[in-house]
Length: 387
Image (cartoon, rainbow, N blue to C red):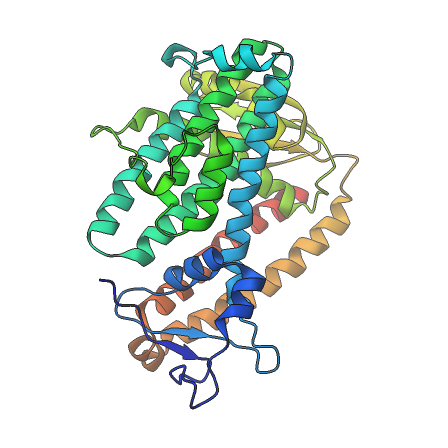
């Protein structure tokens, strides 16, 4: 038996019919979905803490349920993409040939991104098993959300798209999409306890099942005891490089459709080899018109830079950015962030706030302050480069 937190309205009152502050769940289920409601409520309910909901007095809507609905949509979209790509990969085979197809991505054919997503999935399996055994459903929901949204959808699915578009080897593409679909099958089984309806329907559509087969009795995915730390570390460096290039584009207010040259200056041959091996992924995920990777590469004229883990990144913005106007924009943003950071520092310096606020709220404020200071540091560096 699982006991949930007390659900309260925005004023802190327990939801009850007598107060008239308890919305009818059926319209909410019709609008957001039962799984979305279940996920949102569990995700918002740490052990020992009540849940507050901002309920629209007129419509009875609960805006926070958007989180669960968006997450459910993310899972559905991933399923649609994988099934569409599988259909494309096997389009030239008749049904009998498809049934007999044995395209498997063997260990030696797995790329760094394949090994990384497997390692992340195995880590997620271990984490969620511990969380479920301890009845930490809030932590389980959050772990699944982060893995599916960030690791699987925002990273691995995008990498699969890049690799399939770049490859003309039909057998390789079939093996790759089969690998991704089989992994997603395991993800659905791991997610099933918290989103039973959506996962059952997607699981049934993902591949042909025997009569009476159900995800609710399918085996739970297992993970090896020894994690693949090397793949996690190596692909983590690739992710960091991509994120730093994206951050540079954001700081310089570069439009998403604009493709710009990127140079990666590596501090060691090991990093250069890694960046070179993953160049197609880095180039596609950062919208680089050209990508140069080298050891101690020279800074191109008209570029701005950022220092990442073992590399220095140069984004060439000459001809696209008006340096004088961009410097003014960055100085304005720096002023705004300095005021924002000062307000947070004042709040954290208030002993009453720190003593009375929930620990996660205090921690959230500290994270906001750290993020603001990090952004200020990067903006100052870019202002210096534009001088």
